[in-house]
Length: 116
Figure 1: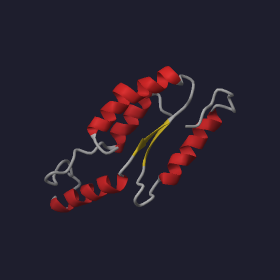
Figure 2: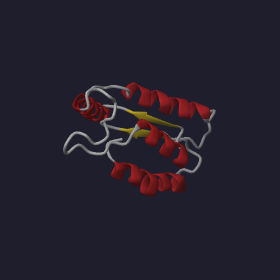
Figure 3: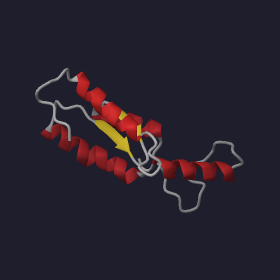
Figure 4: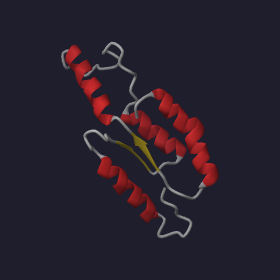
C-alpha cells in the first residue's frame, strides 16, 4: 500500500462499493509499490544505523502503510487476504493471482462468482 490516502479510500469508497455491488463475492486487497516501500525502509534503516527504527526518517519519504496495518484493514473490510506486490520487481505479483484463485475456490464454484 503506497500511502495512507489510498488506504482511507479503500475503507471509505472502494470497500463499500464492492459490498453494495457484489456482497457475496470474495476479494483480495492488493498493495502496490512494495519495492519503493522496501527501498525507503532500507534507506531509513541505514540512516539509523540499522536499528530498525525506520519511521519517517528519510526526508520527503511518505508515511508508508505497514503490512500489519493493511492486514487489519483487509480484515475490517472483509477481504480474504492482503498482498503487497511490486509490478517493477514482480515480487509477489504471482501471489496476488494465487490468492484470487484461492478466494474463488472458497466459493465452491458458486454461480454468482465474478472475477474482475
